Image (cartoon, rainbow, N blue to C red; front, top):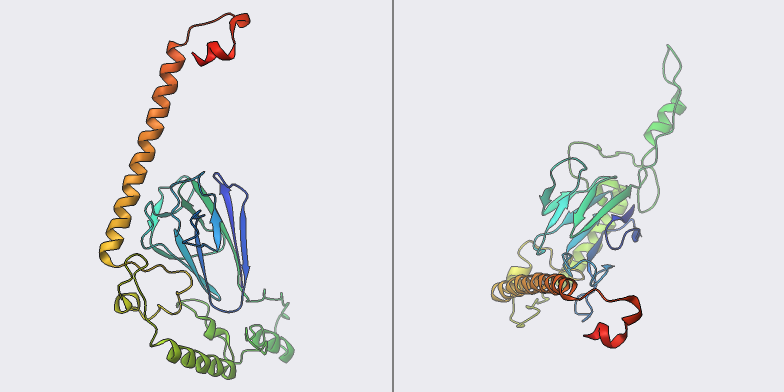
Length: 272
């Protein structure tokens, strides 16, 4: 499966991120953190768009599906459709060609699934379909792990698909066995608030996915989460006030400076 993100409009216009994988993966997207406490996989410019959070949203890639989650960014993520009202989203199953807005940036998605394009088959008019054509149609989908044809391919509509649905029975059994062993090792792992370090394992693993999201998730206790949100609001307020002060200063300076002849302009006069 291949997922490609491109900034179509915004401060980082033209910037791209691409990942190719046949296995589950999690991608954190956010503004670059100059303190390096948070390390997104795809880093947007740290100062050009302050409306993008340092941990803005995650892509949960489960071939052939790609799920976007944004449960707590300060300014939100919006499904972008030109000429239509934007829709704020916390969770959405992305499709090829979808566009989202984060901060002042429009991000486009190109998603290619491991399903091969169906070969055009010209069936004869009248009579029965030859056996070789039936075999081509039957073998169209292949196991994403071993590459062998799927004897019982999944229906591609009407339900949410997992990468296991695109594996043969043998590979599916092996992968499930590996995951069970990994889950058993991680069951005793503890999770702590990134700020005050109190144990919040029960909250972090409430949905059973703490180990799966360990490389992209940041965990806060309730009190620290509220403090971080308040800090974000205060910082945004200070940034707005600074912009207003700068604008007012520029307006006053432009109004008060006298019109001087060109031959009188010097560094000292300009400094005045």
